[in-house]
Structure formats: structure tokens, C-alpha cells
Image (cartoon, rainbow, N blue to C red; front, side, top):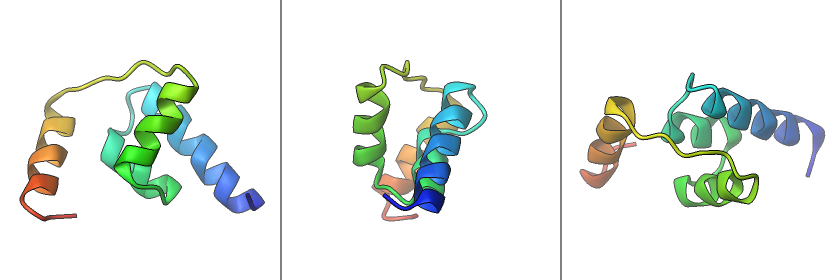
Length: 66
């Protein structure tokens, strides 16, 4: 993995774990799919959080939005 990509991933994981970014935005920052981001977070045992922002992202995603 190239350095810039690795830094983006590490930043995304850190910001997600601090509750600053939701899953969708963290995945976008890391240039990963939501499912891959979920897998990476689980692999590192980062607790998942689900709130209004994640619900809105899921609803948008379900409607075919980005």
C-alpha cells in the first residue's frame, strides 16, 4: 500500500473511532467501500457507532445516492 493511501486509511480510522466521521465519510476518505471499511474497523476491533449521521448515510446509500 502506498504511503499516501496508508495515511488516508489511518486518518479515516482515527477520525471514525473518535466519532468525528461516520462510516460513509471515513470510507470515502480512505477510498474504500463501506463494506471494506467495516471489515478494516472490525479487524482492528474499533467499536462501531451508529447514530443519526450513519442512518442518514444508509438511507441515502439505499436510495442510490453517494
